[in-house]
Image 1 (tube, helix red, strand yellow):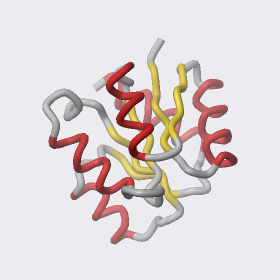
Image 2 (image 1 turned 90 degrees about the vertical axis):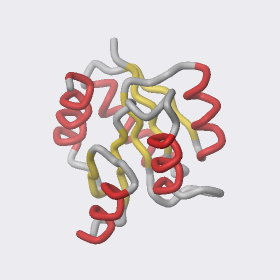
Image 3 (image 1 turned 30 degrees about the vertical axis):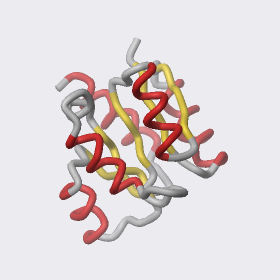
Length: 121
């Protein structure tokens, strides 16, 4: 079974996204910030990472850029998932290396479909 790491500082958003992914047949691990996320990634490499943009400490954009720059994590697909859903935000997310960008509130079917497509590729 594929594993997805969900990084979001909102407990409500994390639960909505995690529940949606579990219903889609995926294993979910969670982190509240970038430091926690990096610890979880080093302990158990996920198949996909879902990142909020607004996080305490380091933004999701910074975290994505760092993950894509590291040889050990550069191949893990990253989905940016944020309330910041303007075309410029999406453009910036892709510039940081994100493989997909989904605006909140998430379309749950789109989220599961996007994650499963990224796992296959």
